[in-house]
Image 1 (cartoon, rainbow, N blue to C red):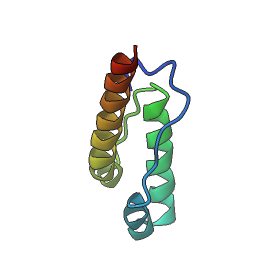
Image 2 (image 1 turned 90 degrees about the horizontal axis):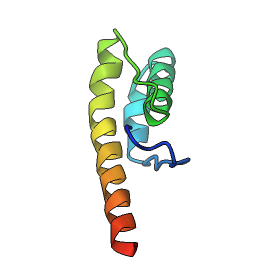
Image 3 (image 1 turned 180 degrees about the vertical axis):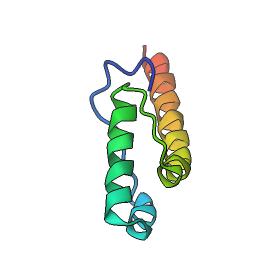
Image 4 (image 1 turned 120 degrees about the vertical axis):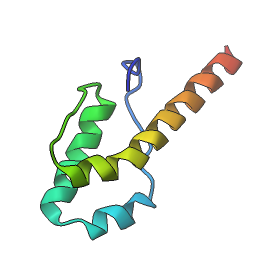
Amino acid sequence: MAGSDLIKSFISYCEWQETFEELPDDVAGALIKHIFRYVNDENPETDNLIVKMCFIPIKQTLKRDLKKYRDELLISS
């Protein structure tokens, strides 16, 4: 998440559990590692189509949360 070097946490949503529960353990592990690499600005890449597809809505949510956080910082400044 570009520009998030000052942010040390992120929100994980309970609704994501359904996605993780449907995945085999090895793919679920790959997905959570992909998420952590993303939020730590490591620009993760994967050839695993399932991880790519599952990550799309998670990434959209993380970006939306980051934008909301930045907007609230501007308002409070």
